[in-house]
Length: 71
Image (cartoon, rainbow, N blue to C red; front, side):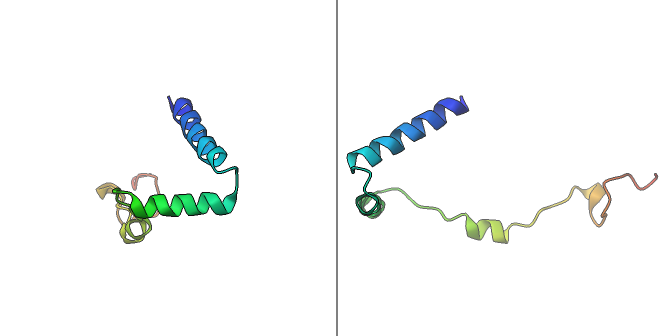
């Protein structure tokens, strides 16, 4: 399944690049215009990653070892 998705993404990318003659400036202009004119929401997950703190299970909180305490 994942391979099919990757193939489809590469096909879309190749079609967009081909339609713009593989010209980087034209591609950037097209993608920026598409970004501005779209009705889709762009989410920046970087702020979520910084705010999220890993939570250890209750039996491991405060412990630096993964071995049980009775060993």
